[in-house]
Image 1 (cartoon, rainbow, N blue to C red):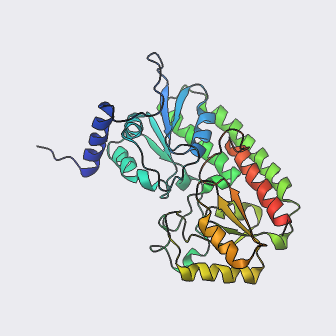
Image 2 (cartoon, rainbow, N blue to C red; image 1 turned 180 degrees about the horizontal axis):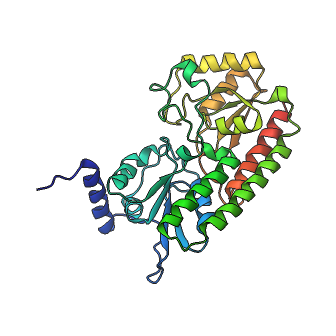
Image 3 (cartoon, helix red, strand yellow; image 1 turned 90 degrees about the vertical axis):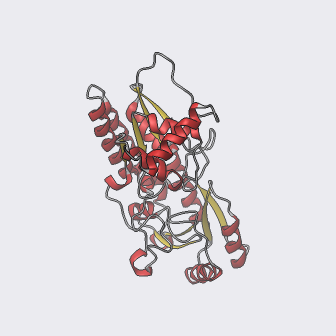
Length: 318
């Protein structure tokens, strides 16, 4: 008699709940739709996957727009979709903390899954080795999962996804669309450089809500001088001593802007700003999710350009 692993039992239980109609999930395909089903964990990965897939695959996104990817908990219908997909496109490096058990269960069942972040030369969190916070503060480990803040790496991720899709369906035009998308990201990189050009080198320092802008800083010559929430996850809780240290760091650098994010309350950032005085501004950026219709961040390219414009405008007011 075989003994099923806890992960397989978890997956089986969630599939049973979904079959019983416990809740609603993403739209189902039509009966005659025999395309590959690709499930992307985040709206950002959904943008990459949709552009590479074109009309040759149906792409579903698990985590809704505007929801923080770090603490999202899937419904049973979404768990079912993830389990039954032809391919799951995940970020990896610990980003999808609420999906880790399901992703591991799918891997145990040998379900096709690609984690993009580890494939595109990931960087370490800033100051990681010096601070020695790997286990305490960095729930992800030492490598930063927020690769999508660098459009060049996004293009490389699209190419990697096309390679994976080719293995599943060799007759698809995945490589052509990935090359086109990658070229578009190179154009986005040039646009961002133009937007940021007026920001003097001496003013290219940022304080952010959490460590989501390492790739942006690395690509465009910025320095992250402090974060409100320690570590790469939004689930960490800063101590009063850490917040006091951040206030001191901002005072030393003369920093007058805190960049918060649309998927998280700005309560802590507002508190730090209030401690520093009325001249300090809190500016929200798109980090963990694309924006809704009308936000100028509906696609990954427009999101990155929108962020760059907001950063340039805010630092120009300092």
